[in-house]
Amino acid sequence: MTSALCSSYAPNIAEIDRGVSPIPTDKPLLLACGISLSATGQQRLVDFVQAGGRLFISPLIPTLDENFQPCTILSDFLGRPELVKHEPTVRLNVGPIQNVHANGAVYRSDTIPDGAEVFGVDERRGVTVGWRLKRGAGEVFWFGASWKHGKNSHSALVTWLLQEDRKSTRLNS
Image 1 (tube, one colour):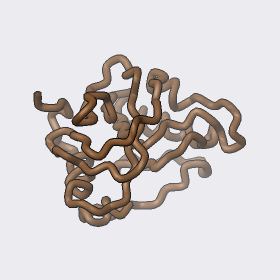
Image 2: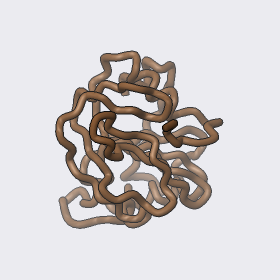
Image 3: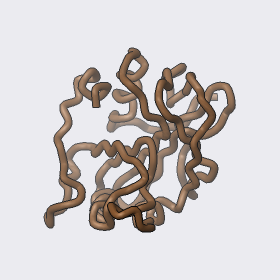
Image 4: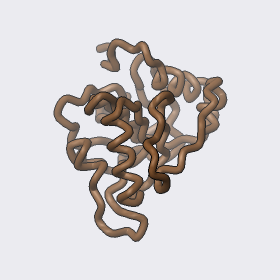
């Protein structure tokens, strides 16, 4: 959240678990998430993306509900990617942003959903830490890192992720 604010992005707060009206799709939705989110919340996120929303998930995709029972609505929608806690790392490349300092937990995606485009890798090990997937009328960006804002690269990362006119997220090789 601090990186978003330092990037001049003024986010709205959305109650994912409650409400009967659809989540508005006029702004991207940033989901800082662990392993649990209610079935209602997961379904509302699926509906949000299907309706044209842009969803950014970091660092995990929930696979449990609020009672820690299996609930894979969102994961199923995204093709059940396998996310694994990654070895400690400090250098990530995200799109055109090189050397994003990872000062928190990092997760890699050992399986990438069909049709997903990789945009984030561990610079030293080459494993996937970020991908973009178009679904329905919207898209989902998964980035497997959590961080404490402390570097200009964190602001650049959020700015780049929130660009709406991006033609591609592919890494330059």
